[in-house]
Amino acid sequence: MIDKTLEDLFHETLKDIYYAERKILKSLPKMARGAQDQKLKQAFEKHRDETEGQIERLHQVFEIIGKRPRAKTCPAIDGIVEEGEEILEEFKGNPALDAGLLAAAQAIEHYEISRYGTLRTWAQQLGLKDAVTLLEQTLAEESKTDADLTKLAESAVNTAAKKKAA
Ligand SMILES: [Fe+2]
Image 1 (tube, rainbow, N blue to C red):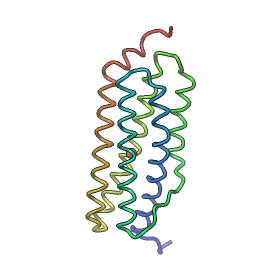
Image 2 (spheres, rainbow, N blue to C red; image 1 turned 120 degrees about the vertical axis):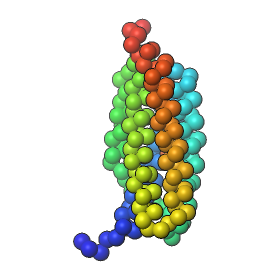
Image 3 (cartoon, rainbow, N blue to C red; image 1 turned 135 degrees about the vertical axis):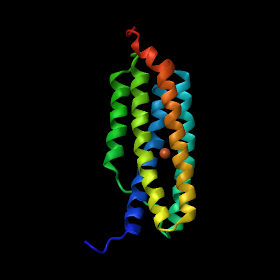
């Protein structure tokens, strides 16, 4: 197929991450409710609020390319979120629950970092300067969230996970 361009790929991938962000927006409150550690709970709540802003930025990027915001089902994020929800159920009431939720959240962040990194690079190649700025803002937030989760993992959460279940 030679009739597809980098513009098309950019648009398709934008629809993919738009779907992912909306899925994550619904999933984060469940993860926050499930988390036992207060700091982890707060990290999920904070990122839920950030995610709303990220969705708003995506609306702006759609506008820049003259398209209406539309989502395209992303089986990858469905699978990653589903794994997190499995942990919520299977480790409920267990000291290892938070470590599992943290790992699930980092898998989500890494997916997003990968998508936003790609979109940013394509936006640069397509000369979409304003889109580059917006995508970089979100990329920075996702990277910061990932780093914060790593800090939490290295401190309380995994230590607590080593304790035996009550
Ligand atoms: Fe996000």
